[in-house]
Amino acid sequence: MGYGRIDNFASKEKITPDSFATYTAPTTIKTNQFAYKGDWNVMSEYANPQKGASLIFNFESKQVFLVMRTKGTPAKVKVYIDDELDSVITVDADKLYELINLSVAGRHTLRLEFEDSNAELFAFTFG
Image 1 (cartoon, one colour):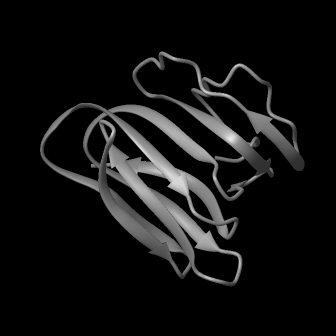
Image 2 (cartoon, one colour; image 1 turned 60 degrees about the vertical axis):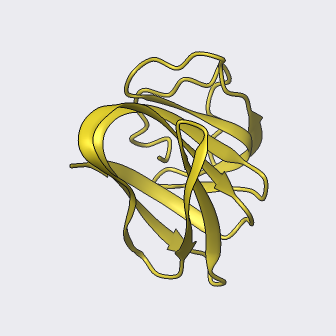
């Protein structure tokens, strides 16, 4: 999720390395693309969303995982699938978190909403 490896980024703004910037999400995101929305601090290896920020990802898969860690205090992340709240994850360690586990693979929209500024996001993986 950091600028050193970022791929398929759909926000119209260019990444501002190693500093805070505000990003917007387009109304349509192509399959396997994602966008930041709100205030983010994007570093080389990870991205740090600020309170109220979100990430929108148009994916095609059965399972979605994200490597995250906390900056110290546990972080709360709301997970939406196709605009419906699916779960709330507490990020309290440096590990791979399961975000989505569907019964069958398909194309969906994932939205993550960040309730604080304590999460650092590294990389998505799929199953």
